[in-house]
Length: 233
Image 1 (tube, one colour):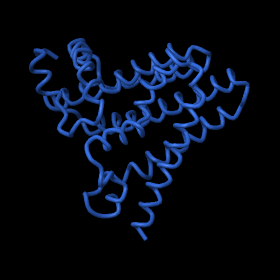
Image 2 (tube, rainbow, N blue to C red):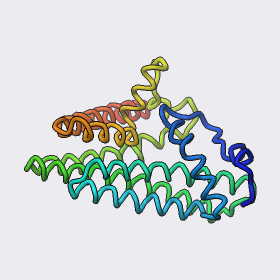
Image 3 (spheres, rainbow, N blue to C red):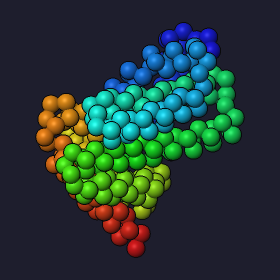
C-alpha cells in the first residue's frame, strides 16, 4: 500500500482512549507497522507471527532462559499492536470483508489466550524446576484459569453501556493515579515488564513475586465477579 508515514499515522489512529502504558507500545509499533504495511504483510500474518512468538517465548522461559523468554514475549506483544494498526489502515483505506474481520477477531482472542497460557505455564514450569517444587506449576495453571475467567466473564461486561450490570465491574471511585496503578497491576502485559526487571536484576525474588501476583489475581477477579453477580441479583 503506497502511503506516506504521515498518511499512515492519520489512518492508524485508534479512537478509544489509550490505557496506562499502552501508548508507549503503540508509539514503538507505528514504525514497524508502517514497514509491514508497505511490504504488503497482512494483519492475519502479523497475528500468526505474534502467536508463534508467544509459544516460543513460553518454551524459552520454561527451558531455563527467563530473560530471553520475556524479551520474546515483548516482541510478541509489540506485534499484537502492529496487527491492529495495519488492520485499521487497510479497513479505512481499502476496506475489509466481513469474513476477514471475523477471522481477525477470532485470531486476536486466540493470540491473547495463547500468550497467557505460555506465560503462566512457562513461568510455573521454570520456577518448579529451579525451586524443586511442583506447586509453582500448579499455581501457573490456576492463574491462567483466573485470567480466562476474567476474560470471558468479567471482562466481557465492559461491552454494555455505562449503566446496568456491567457497570459493577468498572473501576469506580478511583482517582487517575489509583486507576493507573490498578490497571497496571491487573494487566498480564505489564507482567512482561515486571518479570523482565525481576529476572534481570533480582532473580531470587522471582518466586515470591510470582506467588504474590497469583494471589492478587485470584482475589481481584473473585471480588469483581462477586460484585457483578450481586448486581445481577
